[in-house]
Length: 49
Image (cartoon, rainbow, N blue to C red):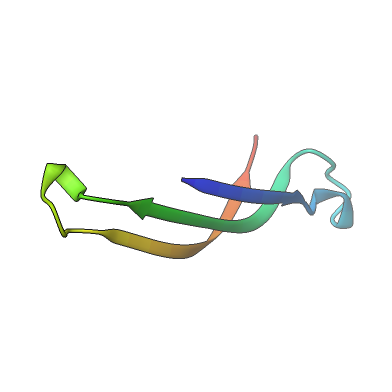
């Protein structure tokens, strides 16, 4: 899993509280089953309170 988050809280006046970015998930031979591969690209929002 790879994710990249950017601190966008400073735009809202809350530095180090709100993050936005993307996450990429890649799983080769899922559950040990050859030929079963899963991958997805997702938007990610994180609010740290």
